[in-house]
Image 1 (cartoon, rainbow, N blue to C red):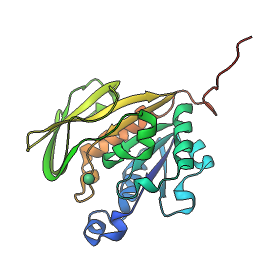
Image 2 (cartoon, helix red, strand yellow):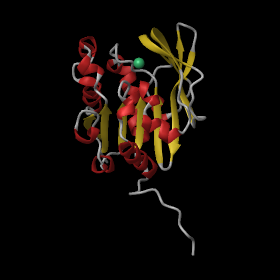
Image 3 (cartoon, rainbow, N blue to C red):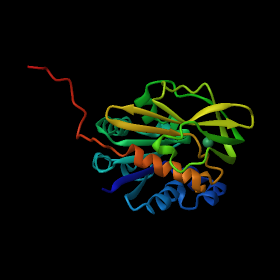
Image 4 (cartoon, helix red, strand yellow):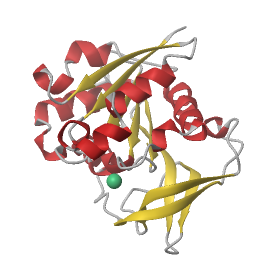
Length: 235
Ligand code: ZN
């Protein structure tokens, strides 16, 4: 069965900063779409903040099996209604993959309910260690991936205790970070993945693409309802 993927991207840095436009001429969403749609079991759409309704609607989300989300500069502009729509679909079974600075998106804060803060420093380099090679998201992934130029994200990371830690990041500054973690909320599966600072073409790295592709398959719903059940008075 085809996995219906929607890549939602804020698409602000790519449009406003020429040096970022050079890194991602199609936008981060365009890059994601290009490599994901090579998979025979995925059909991929993109949506961006500047579109009507911020690129989101109840109909689009109801027709999405897995939503990828990249945001940074304008996360606070996402409407409460859109946050509610995304959370509702995750609770009903839609998968969510939150990328890089989307740890602090309104959607992730609402779903996980903890501060979601961290330490950061630009222009570090990361060794991404796979600490759970048996996990489906780690299939075909090398034990350690070196990302030559990546923003450091450091602990403490204000997430709830994750269900699983699949990747740990180590930076040349000495910090460590839970760079690939999973959660369940309602019937939906969530994967947070740290790599992907916009100044370097990290999403062009084949091993990073492998992880994101695996994550889409992992997060695709095995069970999906129209709406997570309300409180029901038992008779
Ligand atoms: Zn960044």
